[in-house]
Image (cartoon, rainbow, N blue to C red; front, top):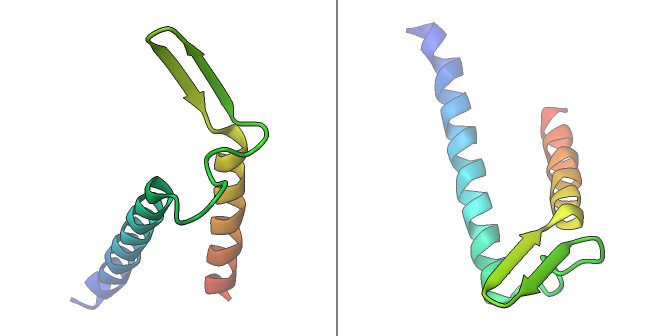
Length: 75
């Protein structure tokens, strides 16, 4: 049973990360975090009934923040 305790920790951390991501998406959707999702470098194309959105800069920013947070948690 001792070998399952490590797996339990991984599940807890994964669950907290998913909940945090869900909270972040909810806040962005409501406009609580201004500017996120409309940064320079994000591609938005609208033509008639067609809309295309590619959040390149937003993805890079979120990736950098998560990398820093997880790196600090590792220490």
